[in-house]
Length: 174
Image (cartoon, rainbow, N blue to C red; front, side, top):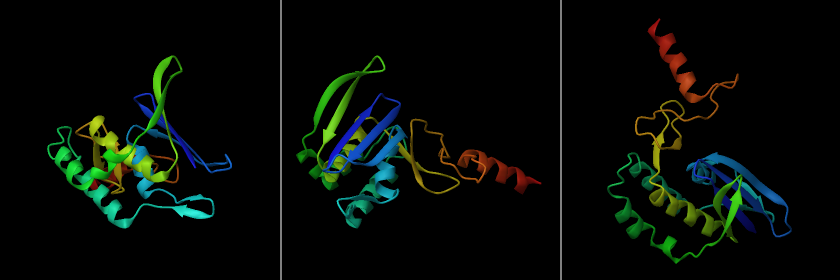
């Protein structure tokens, strides 16, 4: 498996290929949300098996995301050192490349586990905040401490959770 990941600071771009070079996952995410998709999104099938993260590790990461609800990250270094020491064992290959006139680091990994470790390390280095959406109750990454809603599509006509929630509040007020 080959995983290529890069970010320009605002979005994350991901391409996963199997051993034959066939694309098995392609994604474009707002910063920090690639991890959410890897943890809670659709299953990824590679070489006739499902790529998955152990439930124990998923629970640990969920607990970590709950702690990342503000920009100060008080306990994050302690939690990462205690519960996620394994991420420091990983080595990442990257190449600096100009993409759309911006210098970007393009990371290349050969397995799913290394990729998840890399995404966990980005929580602290990027000072990402994770919150639960007030509408769909799913995690989302944000740079805004007052953010309450994710930007996922919540209605059949393509409205986001924030918009759907405001409609619900208006209807309840009547």
